[in-house]
Length: 384
Image (cartoon, rainbow, N blue to C red; front, side, top):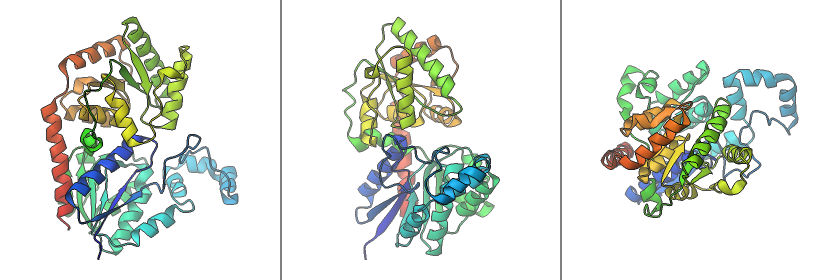
């Protein structure tokens, strides 16, 4: 009988940081558990990366089937105003539930959630469905190096609480927000909870990157979110003007997100630059790691651009819009390098230059890499 491990994660998100988590965990599992087949499933039900004109789960693009048109006409406002109803609708689309049912119909020795910020509204329903179906077959579940994001819906919190306290959930390791997830666990299940670190710190090793091929270019990582887009737009323009004044080379880049890439093009155009100042949109996790490896340092918004940079020994400055950034920089011993999104652009450049002089704490990063590996292996070994 073939022994199988199920690996669950955002394999095909256009935010390639998610794919890096999945591919790093897959690589590390294959190194250790050579006698096992590893089957992977995308949490959002995708089988490939979105094309350039797609926007997965865009709340403004409810169309096509008749029942969806009815929702547009009579229920769109309700869906948008109720987080749980929207996520229930989005995760109930044709094929998505079938994918989960089909995946969970197989037999596995263990199922591993690869990690990332999966404890948030967006993933509540698929996480619950996977854990619930796997529980029916007594298949052990491991949550590896997860993060805790925004959960607005009390119903979604109840789904997470139900899933995490299932008997088949063997271990829950967290890269951040341990106390928040602890509140969802019963007293007898709190012993499942352990601290870990993001496996993206293994990126250099997993992709075999030569860190000696850096240019003298500063990478400026762009993000596009409804809450922060106007702040990002203004701050990056100011940063570019300051870098030009100091005669420092720069290039805009994104983590693969189509919307982020469009934002980068818009910022370049607003300053009368053509698209040559924007790095080509990476279309695979490897391409993103290789792109960041070419920069001497980065200023960026996306968490995994900084995790990749840490793996590559590349100094970075984060412009904080989510506390997961603050928690990561605190963990690597450089809280001062995660700054308010509105910090004066001249101070940001001064801090970047100082970070280039000081460098990274290699000893601490290697410790976190080894800890993430130890926790992953011990969690999986515990049920095999």
